[in-house]
Length: 358
Ligand code: NAD
Ligand code: MN
Image (tube, rainbow, N blue to C red):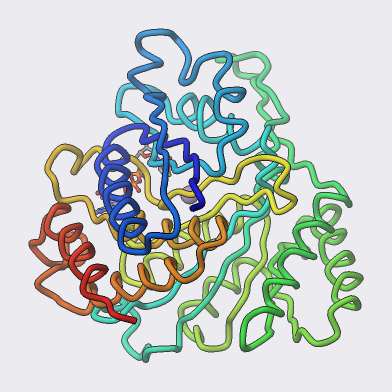
């Protein structure tokens, strides 16, 4: 039997609630399957840790999760600590050293969920956004001088390397090739940002030559927001920079019904380091502690983790259970306009797993 060692880092706010639900579902799924099991190890890193020790995670934190098979992450962020402290102190402190350069975000309108787009039909909106996750606008370079003075200057410098762009482009073309439509849209802002974004376009064209069976096009990021909204059926796989894809994927999540549903994987495709799986939402302190966080984003994320671990059958079973539950409006949490609780949705997903005879 395969045993998977998973580092669980629930973090803050509803991160704790949805990761607890995710672990419960994953354990029941493993029991139902019988062919594999999980050993979850918990790490209570996050804002409370920061308030007690002055750091979001201990100094040897990376070494302690280095050899796990995957990282199952909730969310970070609290009202009384600056967001850049929590983000750079934990989430990016893991993504960057573990070289999780491919951030993959599937988006689809699940059964029973209403898209805010009036005319969208099932199947019209079925995208995977690939976000460059290691450099670009979030490379961390820059600074502030003359703080508070009239002559103050601040910079956040985008850094793009040929190696970094080529590897994410190859990853995106390969992913596009694995999907039925074999279509990739490359997003830039190469009209205004005339150095890095033009290099991005050049590399896209070079890599495209290695994938003659993938049909691809280019979009400027501003026009892309319109295309996503007005002609969603023309898109399939999408690749964009760290900042652009960050923004586009929140739009995508909203167009697919709710941020509470959206999943993501931070992959180190070479498997030199563990990959990290998390719902795309944050700690949502406006609803934390109320028991109404939508756990579906974490369950969908769990299917990505199962695929990565090499358990595609269990991933498909969990996805069927999720879709059976979203199809029932009585099981929608308040973010979807319903009144169901995290507990009720979790129980319904477990019941669907146990009733699945495929
Ligand atoms: P958020 O995603 O936490 O919440 C945005 C809105 O969506 C809120 O109204 C929230 O109630 C709702 N929402 C989000 N997830 C939900 C779910 N699962 N079920 C039901 N409703 C849900 O984003 P925000 O409010 O901009 O940020 C809150 C904190 O989270 C900040 O500190 C921010 O820095 C942090 N954050 C962290 C991550 C991360 O850890 N990856 C991502 C985004 C934001
Ligand atoms: Mn974001």
